[in-house]
Image (cartoon, rainbow, N blue to C red; front, side):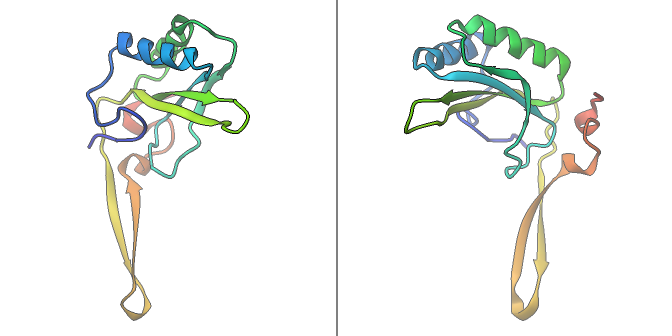
Length: 142
């Protein structure tokens, strides 16, 4: 099951050249880029681990791409995304976020149904990756 979070998630994976073009666009807008990774892509897991610090002073996509490649080398079986943050007063929010690396096997989620009092039904999602401890999901070790 392909995780569809962030911009471009319904498209085929971007090449490094296409990633560089998107980073260039973000930098031309004055947005700061950062890189995050996780092995638990649950939709409510909004706090991925940061790879280094946000790159507020970069003006060239090559620097961000270098960090993306370093993160891929260190965490090949993790989800990795690039974020572009707009610090303009009045916005101060993420303007662009897209996945640049995925594990080879994406097991997906299961739907849990809980029946309650008076025919009430509650649903929740559980990631199959969450069945393993952190760091061992997708067959990788830290």
